[in-house]
Image (cartoon, rainbow, N blue to C red; front, top):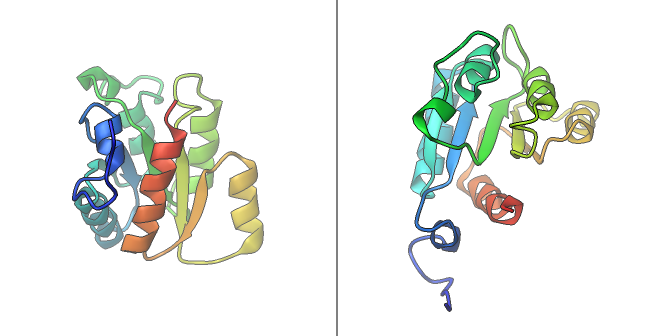
Length: 154
């Protein structure tokens, strides 16, 4: 099937049998979280949000005693995008927990931060982050993410 890049709907939606990619967005700042959600939804993604790392782990089914999980609803997350600086659990700590999990380790994790600190960027990438994005998230960043989403699918 030939696909045209001028199509209004991204090609990767079609490659996934018309199912929208599901992204978990984690940020303690409500405004940043809403911005990420809006940009991703504009790019034909299904978005679930979490206000912190522990909540994200609950949604992913990685919290020890939690039944309130996305997988319980039959949903699969195709990507996780998280803020680096959050109280309680940083995006880096969340990344490490996700990458240690046998069920979630293959899911791409993107870290966002308003601070561009090379050592922080490298630490996250070494730990398995797919990408490190400078905040605030822009539509051009989302285009890069959707490309990542396409390339990361097995």
